[in-house]
Image 1 (cartoon, rainbow, N blue to C red):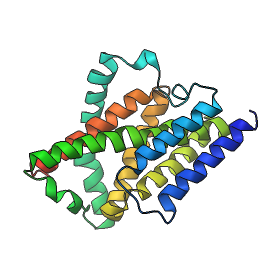
Image 2 (cartoon, one colour):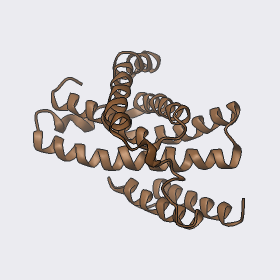
Image 3 (cartoon, rainbow, N blue to C red):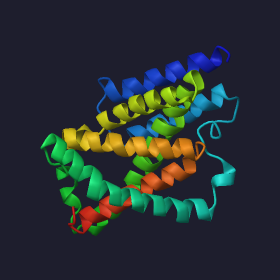
Length: 217
């Protein structure tokens, strides 16, 4: 590991922390901006090959993986989320998850479609590039992928991930930590297939948004 491979990730991590925790006003497109910065950083660090280091592998970009496996995993994860994770955490905290920020979607098709596009870009692609593709992969690069290292990696990354969803209250944050941890394990088991994680995340969020639109949540 040379100096470039140490300095560039540290600078990039500093930019990520500044964007999330600094004095700048957060915007819905924050994750897109950070994703672009990460791709540029990887381009410099890996000498013109920014995408493979994140987990974008051409072999995994196929119909079976993206339009069959990913939706099925997302559906299973969503069922687990609705019937086990949310009720369990609500029972633990005694506080219902706060979905009030989604109330405007109910029965509003135009806003729901717009929201789906934004969420696919900022959460599906943005969050997975930042949290799994970059942060998780770089943690592994520096500290390895032993069982202990992987557990610490997931706890740190998903704790960070949960914090970013503070608008959902403490119950929502804990739920996000659990779902994020499951996604991280899938990422590891699937040998860092970021295409799959993006699609799972995107389909999972789509099911949630459609539930808000239909007034089921």
